[in-house]
Length: 522
Image (tube, rainbow, N blue to C red; front, side):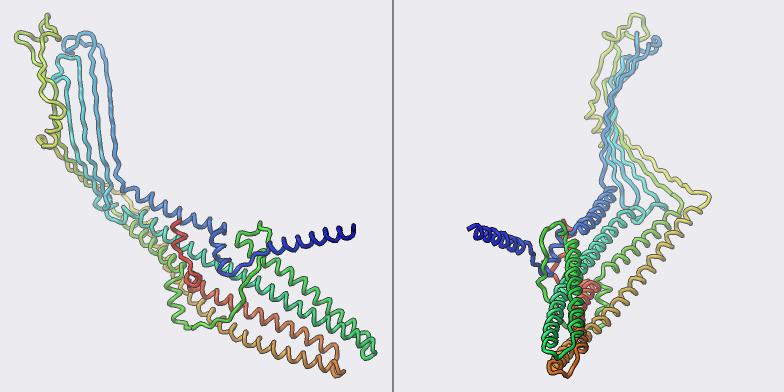
């Protein structure tokens, strides 16, 4: 009874372990691995912030054209000792002022600015000589400032905006290039994991053949048809294949960890099982078409063009900054006044000793602040000022040096674009040769595997009737195993070459139905 219970416990533990191990396997197709990576890869998430940062930089630079509203309100009171009868106050002279100013400032595209302002002020004093009292003042003013040489034009004004917009596109193309590289890294890791599993199966088959040969040699030695040395030779080959099996298993672990790291799955406690089988897909290869496609679609080409555009903007800006500064400013303003008029009663004068400022004056409400503003907007009192000022250094050595630097940067950008285009040319030429060579290798290794297999079978038959040697059969087994491994590698290399073509020609997004806008609109 105890044995039966022990057996059931062991059976359940083993069954539970196997069930758990089965659940820890995660099967992934290549497309699923790519989608998972694009969603979870941490490096990509960091790189996506660069494009968002560039977008905010563009917003910041565009802010120079946002109108600025300024409101100033001031209330003040001053009190001073009276300086006698002529001050108009007996004990102390008191002045109270309240003012309100509203101004709207707008930057203009050609480098100038316009400022519109409205100003109101009310002043009141206890001096009998202040007339009107309180005094109301209103003014509306428009000021236009425009540079005519230095800082004139769209380029000097919007240089930072143009460059920020180009930098945003550069960041987007850099992100696109990073995604292409990331997807290729997934493909490379995925297909190498597939190869590692296939190579493990090939190694197991090689081990099985060597073990079969060892058993045959042991039988032949027992019946006296072979020398004992044949057993040692076969055992050595079995040991070598067992070591190759250990290496193959380690290769799987290494390849799997590399893929899991890209997928951001390193902390996940399950085994990734690739479900794709490598295929030989034929495509039309035409150098001029490939080159044109690469030059049109490659993000690094677009980045080089945008950097060149930034350098051209820099030259235009530096050329403008080497001009004298000629500034035109024009101001137009209209005013209006109001307040209470002080009238002395007949026979009363502030210079008479018995004058009482409370009872001996009358106030006539002449104009309110609204009436004063009405005068302003009717332009009853027009005022204007036009000013032209010229400022220039006695030497333009600094500006000339900055212009020379800008031209050097332009030359660098032109050379860089040419270098990128040459790189595309070289990569297209190299990848076409690699694809053609890999296609030939696939066919060659396929034939080699078939021939090596037939030769091995023939030699094993000869060995069974004593017409061959153990050494020759072992050698043929190794050659057959090597040809199988090379054939598997050639198919994997062909698929990786196809992946490189997609990356070099920027076809990857279309191949896997990936929308780049999904990454820049998050």
